[in-house]
Image 1 (tube, rainbow, N blue to C red):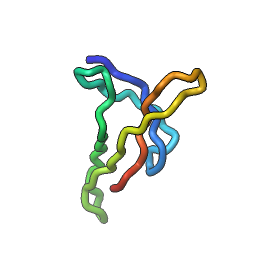
Image 2: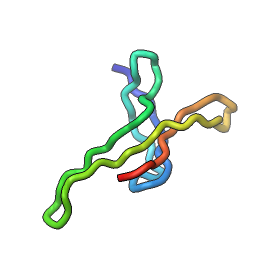
Image 3: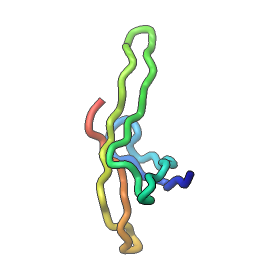
Length: 70
């Protein structure tokens, strides 16, 4: 399975670049959910990021994830 180094904007993963598995169409998924395990004082939850298109410094079309909710 192929992966793409994808930038995350906003939320707890702001500024991180992580490998994301590509779909059969060779794109990153439209929505990316990150499960966060429960702790002693807080139940488990999910961070939700949505795909956004942007133009990189090299003028090529790229994808990044923007924080939606937790």
